[in-house]
Image (tube, rainbow, N blue to C red; front, top):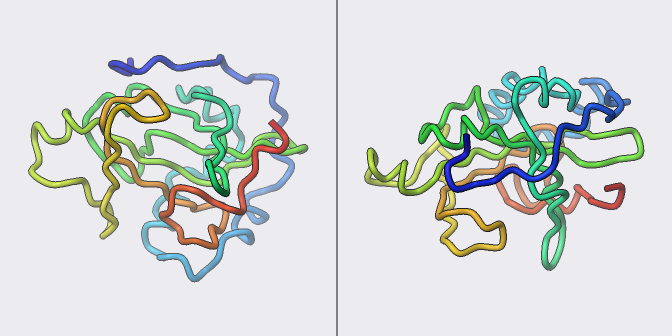
Length: 177
């Protein structure tokens, strides 16, 4: 369970399979992004291109489609509460999968690695780093109602014109939610 974090919404078993195959997602990704971490995330999440595979693996939608206050969006985060609550970071097990709602169904666009700050700092003296990318600290209170945490977005399945590890992506929309 997600200590201190209640998941909203239920399983979306009625979502249709993604209309675009893996190749279509790969084409949407810009090869200029830092290749190693992006490729590791793709390898780890290829099995979740279809959102129904994510829900079967214990990921549940959280907070609906998240849009930026000024620009861009993140999409719908499907969170695995057990992974968020474990206090660890593992590139092969992202805590959240991010999907963009579209006319063709939910499209996998990226992931978010999340670890609660108190759990991380109990065993580490600095923020998490994954393949050279340092996580951002998000204090509490915050707009998501989460405890203080460290987070890192990886836009592995959708190019982000601002960078592969920036929170908001101008190429993601909540228009079809």
